Amino acid sequence: MRATRLNCLVFLAGGAAALAIAAGPPADVHTDHPLHEVMEASQTPEAQQEMMNDWIAMGQPTAAHAWLGRFVGEWDVKTETFMDPAAPPIVSSATAKVTWKMEGKWIEEHFHGDMRGMPFEGFGSTGFDNVKKQYVSSWMDSMGSGLYVSYGSVSPDMKTLTMFGKMDEPMTGEYGKAVMYQITVHSEDHHTFEMKEVVYGDPFTVMKMEYRRKGAMSDAGEQ
Image: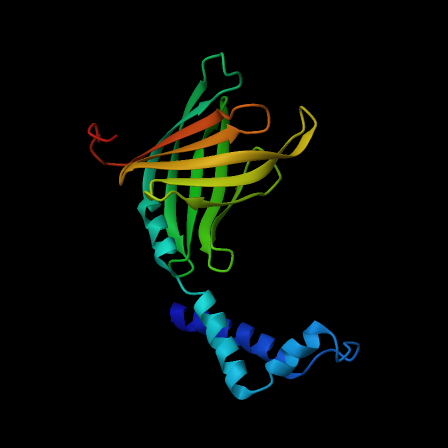
């Protein structure tokens, strides 16, 4: 039933786009405008069906989405926050639950822990954009009111996902500052997440989260 509803929504969205093209170019578009040629080329039933097929294919899960399945499950998390590279980190603990959403296209994480003695809750989603050919992730948490979005790709050995985004630091007056996020897979039951400062000189880790699957044995043989 869920798959049927999803397909209906995709069909309706694609149909709306097809109808917009079938209606022809806006009245204020001149015949020598590039949009006019695109609209004219899309008038045939065959062209409209091809466009509909492309629209549906664009929304299907791929191997890139399946790669995210390794993160699904329940996790114990050790968090280290580095306020100063020369000082010891602030250590805290948390738990996370990751589930599939949208028929295998997105993973959704619910994160619960503490941050410097205060209750902390985070919510994130990660998927793969078939159009941009990039992974995309969003994050929000109880310590702020902003939404963080990042894009990136996985390494050739399929072990490291590197993404870049922006963050605001009201205490320093820095807004839209570039940051790097890296998820490194050590085993099916162990991965780490690092947020790195990349603006001033060599990158350095400002936060590291070590995820270990609940109930899994220690993987001492990992590299």
